[in-house]
Amino acid sequence: MIAMVLWLAAGVLTLFFLFSGWWIYAPFAFASSAGGEVLVLLLAIGGVALAAHLVGRRAGP
Image 1 (cartoon, rainbow, N blue to C red):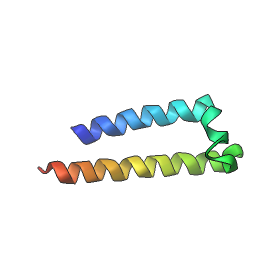
Image 2 (cartoon, one colour):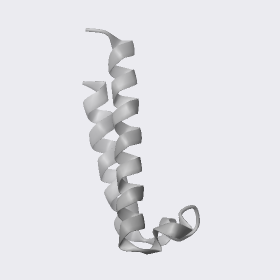
Image 3 (tube, one colour):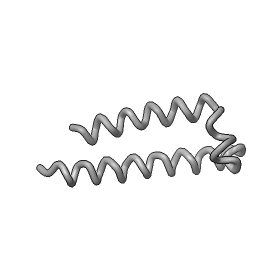
Image 4 (cartoon, rainbow, N blue to C red):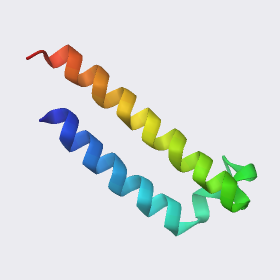
């Protein structure tokens, strides 16, 4: 349950930051191209999936 809430919250934040545009140019200068933005999005989703997996394993069944 906690992992699902974290997944949804991080997904919403990722979409917000992706479409707001201001955060891309400072930490991810390479993301000015479409391919770079997709790469950043995939990295964010992968990080969220890993965090949700770790939280789920720690919480137990």
